[in-house]
Image 1: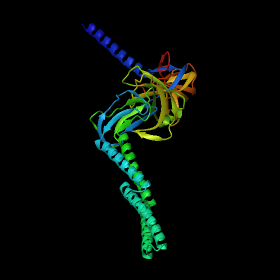
Image 2: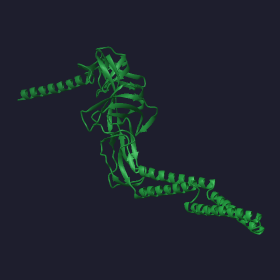
Image 3: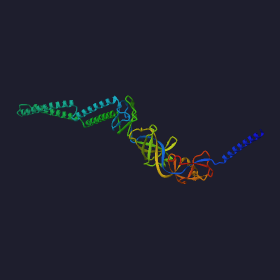
Image 4: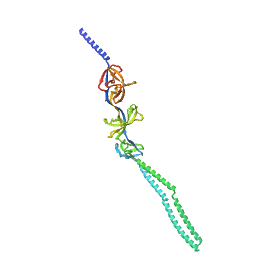
Length: 413
């Protein structure tokens, strides 16, 4: 019994010693660290960001006159020609103004015609009648005077009778002269000028009334498609209210917001791919057409607005939508590539931890293009080098490690 107890104690001691030894060995063993090899790949350098789509050519159409919308002959998405009626604004007072203006123009024309013909018809007719009577009286007086003159020469009439006949002739002539002067005084040049001015004022007022009526018809300023239609029959519009937008939707402009540090990678002519979360799997292809001229705040970001144009032949992408954009900034063939997460940075610059035997070596590197997950290295590494992936174990230069190597750089294309 005593012997069995001793054997049991010996086994327990051996187990405890083994556990302690294993713990000591494990504690002194180098930590396990994942490594990846530097590979040569074709690296497509991209820049991912967001933006907003809008037509490349468009115009907001606004009401010019207040009133009730009586008719909207177009619908959302309809293609219209330039000048097509988008909405009709009803205002009865405008039509009444046109009628009143036409009446005033007609009256002013009649007054001017009367003045140009010599005066008002009634007054002119009266003067002409009196002139005719005066001329007839003059002819009779002249005949009577001549007859009395002959009789006076034959002493068949007195000198006083002959003088009286001459006086009647003179009176008739004076009456005719007075009527001619009165007829000439009916219309002065100033009267005609004033009548012409009144006609011009009436015509101007009529044109203004017609323009106001024309403004009640809201027309398309350019050919395109109607979108953002904001009115319907029965709604009330004030001057300046939005009626609709008209633009070309087969080709869109996308304002892409690029963070300030990344703007140096962007150039005109670079391809861009647009996606919209509302249509998963759908892509639109386009081109960078203009770089930003200023930096603006976008929330907490400082961005430049990069203009791109994209084809939208099926009109699936709606103006005003928020989209995602990927700009292909460069394509590097046969490039040395590492995963972005292997790249480290401090005050001295970019570096990686290189596997040298079973130890870590800090290696400074120079980078160039990058994709979403990979980075091109142009100096500091060679193909086949092994660089450390991120680890839970603190890594320091010269530290011994147990390397676990991946077949190819994770994240590389």
